[in-house]
Length: 445
Image (cartoon, rainbow, N blue to C red; front, side, top):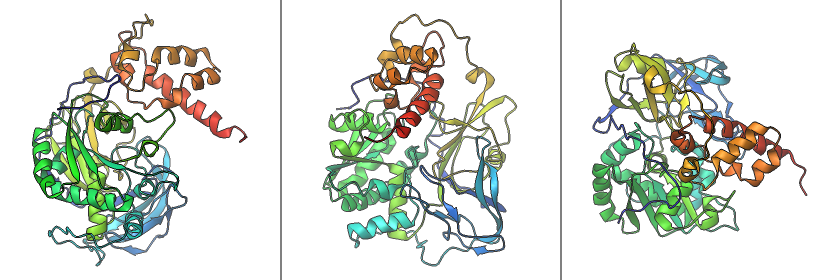
């Protein structure tokens, strides 16, 4: 039986143009530009300086807070500078720039193709290895994984759920790793189960990935404690709260977290990274990135080193298409527009999407007719038309909080369905940030 979440959702065209494109190893370039802002929370602090020699897998940035993470070099060579450089939005962020010299890896990294199945580590040792490897969530938020695997003492995890839904149109990075490396993903799940002390896990995969489902089910025969769950194709199936609803029927409360209902959610890509960190001593310095778009000459899935400029990726797929008008890091629903084509890939980069003017042109905004389509589509049960009205009224922050604007997951379903072409997502996102800022600055009682 195919499962899905109960409230809202939309059905955009899949456009999985790269589903059959096997993962190719992208060549190491002559220079890497590695950002210190690789994760949610505080950026890392550089611990190298100009002239230092580094190897692949060596720590070059250390955490600066509880929600922060280590950053490792993805190449070997000489540090040429530590300086602010524009990120994909054009904002200055500290980068470590490395001139590549060969490809020398840290000796503790196991580069053999052998799959390591035994897990001889304690829960504490697993979490420490994951932390030291700089593993973050690869489903979009890039939240440090070791924090998720160490919930508050008053919270108890009952289940681990791996997110393999990859509901975002165009993106196929997770699809490919489930087809090509299913056993390592499941060993990663078993590692996280041991860290959480849970004895049941689920892997949710949308029905439009039949080969990935078959591949994961075959590998799961050796893991009786892990169940592969086929999900209906519906966006945003990959949202944490929607996935939990689909798989377990449990509803995360307003302003709540998955752990509040006994669940920890991790992406399948994160699970693979956990396997490599714990079993192979390999930090997170590379990942699979889908390069796609109807205007792209060559549809590809690359295994890329972190710090690879987007402009160099473009060169590898036939160059800049003449009719490309917008560059997006991620998918069309929740991805971020790339303002700086010379920006480099991050740990959480999953796709590089090119779209034409015709595909991205916004239609003229009309008047809200209160048709209710945005409310029907909202997977969080909100009323986007009302939030829009309150946002435009100005200084209605208490009312916005009352209407639970902070529960918005910014999935874009409201914008997708609005017949009046009102930029609901943009308006709500801006005001949501303001409400959250006000809430954080309130004096504690």
